[in-house]
Image: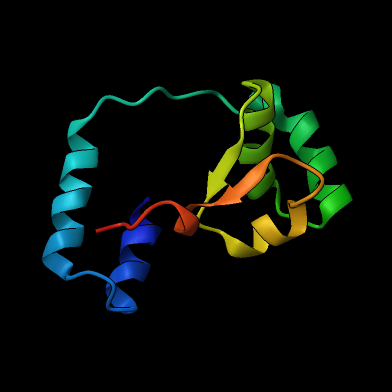
Length: 97
């Protein structure tokens, strides 16, 4: 999420203060963490099939594991996976600040 706010400030879609306030709200929350070890095989398959990094593919595998759509700010990832896996671009539905 940090990169999302960084990019929004650089593109002047929000102020630094708005981004810092939004990050503080995120940091105040409790977040579920999932170990990636059990997702590596599926992520590896996605990475090879679609030419993505293992890092990106772990998010794809996690969404698949939970039977949900991956919503990401990574437009290149969305373009590569659209029509093959349930993925959509965050920018269509969310304004960071």
